[in-house]
Length: 67
Image 1 (cartoon, rainbow, N blue to C red):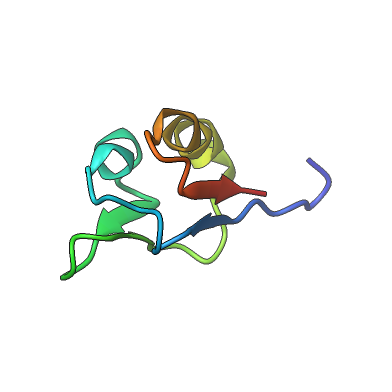
Image 2: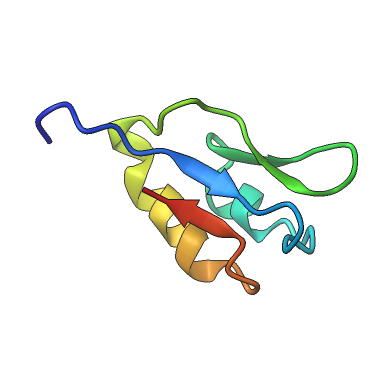
C-alpha cells in the first residue's frame, strides 16, 4: 500500500452502542463504559483493514468512518 495508514473514527453523537462493530472487528473497536463504540488502535493494521471496513459498512447508523 505504499505506507498509507488507515485510521478509524467513531462519531460518538451518532453511535447507538449496538456492538456490531465490536463483534465484527474486536481488534479495532470496543464499547466503552458508556456503551459507545471507541477505536482501540491508532492505525488499522493491514491484516485488519477488511474487517474494519466491514464494520463501517455494517454500522446501522453510519457512525464509523475509515480513511
